[in-house]
Every structure is written in C-alpha cells, then in structure tokens.
Picture (cartoon, rainbow, N blue to C red):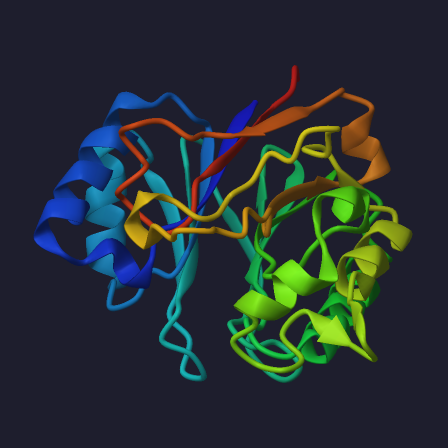
Amino acid sequence: MNILQYNILDGCKTLNRYQHLMKWLGEQNYDVVGFNELNDWTESEFQREMEKCGYPYCCLFEMESSPYFIGIASKFPVTKINRIEASPFHHGMLHVKINNINFIVTHLCPFESERREKEAEAIAKYIFPIKEPVVVMGDLNTFSPLDRNHYTFDKIMERERRAMQHIRNGEINYQPMKILLDAGLNDVNSSDKLDYSMPTEIHQQEDPLYARIDYILVNELLLAKKPSARMIRSSEVAKLSDHYPIECEWKD
C-alpha cells in the first residue's frame, strides 16, 4: 500500500494552487491520501474532485469547532469509525478503516506545546485498545525527540510565534511526540538527515528554520510490514502549500 499525507494550506483555494493540486494528485498513484486544512471544502466538492483524481471513496470531516477540516480519500472502500472534535482536539480527529487498517488523521494545535501534550495523550488512550494495524498521520505541529540533534534552542526561539509554541520550562518541548512514541507508535520517517516538511517556496526566509512537523506513524502490527516514508520536495509541490507532503509505502 502506498499512502500520502498532505497539509494543503487553507484549502488550497487560490485558483492557481487549486488547479495545480488537482493536476498533481491526478498524476500520482496512491492508495490512500490524508488531508489537513481542507478549509471551505464541502463533502460534494471533495467527493467530486477526488473521484477525478482516482479516489472514489472519501470522508470529509466538516467540523463546527474549526474551519481547518480534515479528510481522507481512497481507492478502496472507507468505513467511517469515529469523528472527534471535542476538547482537547484543536482541529479534530478522524478515524476510518480501509482494507482492515485503522487510519487516524489529525491536525494538532499550532500554539502552546502543552496543548499538544493533551492531544497526544488523548490519541494514545484512543488507540490503546485497537488490536489491529494503525496509522496516525497529519500535521502534528511538534518536533520529534528523534530529531533532537537537528534543532537548537536559540534558533527555535527566533522563530517562535508564541512563547510556548515549542518551548516549555526553558527547553525545547519534545513531549507531545514522545507520548505518541511511548504509546507504541513508530516514526517511519526518522533518519540521520532531517527530512524536513517546512518551509517550502511559499514561505521563503533568509535564514529558515527547517523543521519536520508532518508525520506518518504506525503501530507494531503495521511496522512488521517494513514501511518506509519520505517527504516529497519536488518542483511541482514546492509552491502548492507551506508544507511538503509525506508518503509511506509497504508491501501488503
């Protein structure tokens, strides 16, 4: 199976980006695609456009609590399991099953890291009783302790939008991701060289902070299939969003 996770930036609603996104997706051959920031999309539009791209089975989570909708599109039938937008989730959590695999798409809080800790704890508690393959994917807005060697306190402080976005008690807060890893999820895109998901050409900076905040995590049952993941940083996607997409593949 070959899957993709993509934060498309505010619905990708500018005409140029929208057309290029649909063209690019239509040229790909994924089995499942998870989305963050489907702002202003409707269920009918999502179904129509995904069908054009080769994904006849879709689920869009149109939240009342957040305009940053999440969704999933698939070549295979989608069984809707659960949709959660209650606290502590900032942009909700969507749980579906595709080909006997539990897919959880979420988009964690972009602000205080302590809020992401609570979201991570809720995800860990949610997946604990699931005794089947699990994928958790999305823009998790957090740094991984596995990337600790790639970040410095001073560099992150220069980029902080809020005092506690990634810093807590005077240190970089890796706890949200650590909670997920300790819950039995595995980061299949961790490597010695940072495979960053931001920034793209949309938000060019003179001295950018290269960061990996988009993830595909799998539990032990799926890890046995030896999945591999990578960010796609091509010229086609460099100007589609402020995030690069991440893909993951394993043999069924």
